[in-house]
Amino acid sequence: MDHVAGAITAPKTNHGRRKFFKGLGKMAAGGTAAMLFGELPVLRAQSTGASQDTANQIFLAALIAEDLATTFYYSGLVGKVVQDPNLAGPGGTATKPNPTNSNIPNLDYVRAALNQEIQHADLLRTVGNFGKDASTDPYQTFYFPAGTFDTLNNFIATLEALENAFIGAYLNAIREFASLASRSGERGVPNGPYGGPYSAAQLEYFAEVAGSILGVEAEHRVLGRVITNTPQANNLNYEQTDGLTSVYHGSSSAVAALTPFLNPNTGPAVSLSTALYDAKMIGLNSTGTIPPQ
Image (cartoon, rainbow, N blue to C red):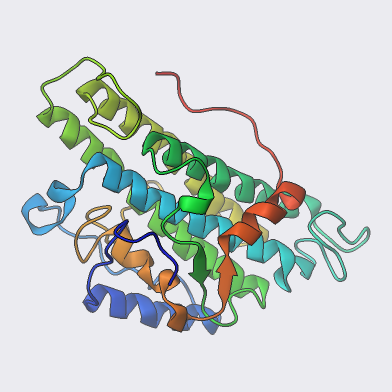
């Protein structure tokens, strides 16, 4: 797998990952994505990696997730999936949908999601001081189960599973940033570039920004369900952590949950650089910036 040496060490294979791989097989067969992440955990900090996560490790894990999401949405816009009548229609493309047999609002959901994930990655890369552009991101290639982009149902099943994981990761990030802030005695903003050390005020603000990204990921989950006409697409009173108890460290971390998509054995590869290049032509811009500090 392509990565920057020393940037990240993936957790060892564990029961949670085996369950995730099993779930990937179900998705490839068109099964439900709801079984990917078991029951909600009992939140005991001493049994998780949350107390070990640093702010920059949280940013790094989130950056990997956003890059993964970028390649995912890109792949849905350039293959068989986009020609479903619920998107661009037979013979249609992301920018030239079938004029009589397509659903342009649905297509625009996916095009906008692509650019939103890129915006999130750009922010995380800057705040974590990880590099000037995506060429230095830890992973440059992502892998998806065979069939993920063959049908709309497979694509949306994977979308829901990934977005649930992203939502769970950002919920954990909010809690971890708040915990780090409570342990920091410095309220002022330290001098120096992004990358830390961070003050309590900055960490509190990062929690707010994580919440703002979480809200957009929740929108993606719902709009994915809208595309397939799923009854009551907004079916939750509360978003959940989906079994994740930390962001970076531990067997139930976001990094552990996403490692199948970093493994060539999972399935076909998608290049991040290709996705970012083509996104300039097929993505759809959205408005708004991060919350004011």
